[in-house]
Length: 195
Image 1 (cartoon, rainbow, N blue to C red):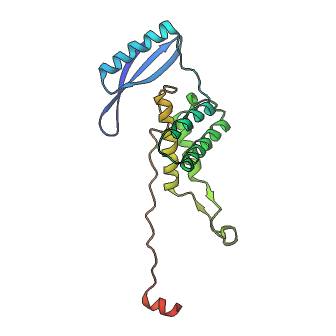
Image 2: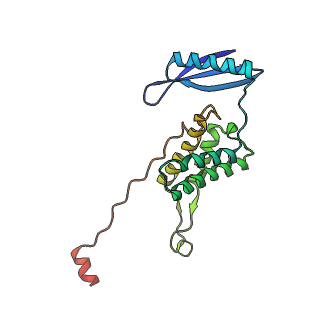
Image 3: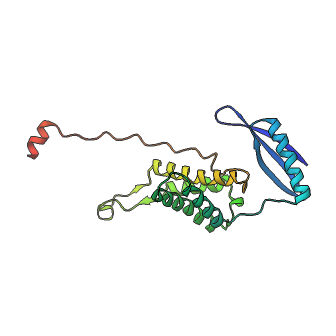
């Protein structure tokens, strides 16, 4: 049995998805932005699954990350930034492996949410004299938002290649940034005392 359903996007537009069940396996795929495209995609999928017996194969994290890294190297991103992006994606992969998730197909939205919650509780100990002064800070929300963006980009790439049906990080909202603290400036009087 198959069906087409639509979801409302954040910007007010609509996105169509296909819900297809074959041999007891439920398959959900992005189908397009118009109903006509979604109907055509459904027909194509039904044909592929009927005659080619094509079912989503599980893609391992390492294979997906290698492919994503090759893709990033074709863009104008510097090698240093590519390494940073891949490092953040590998951190998420390690988190998933601890949870016994070995393929990108098994990652769900709650895994993404749990990872972000766990990352936001990490304490930074590399601040100057932090152990001596007993001053510890949490990772800033802007750092976590950057990580969300990197991992979201990785899963968007996986959706584009049709390895997965949905980006588990798509519904993750950026964290609120703390307002910047006002900088302290020396007054003329302070400067006279110093010099």
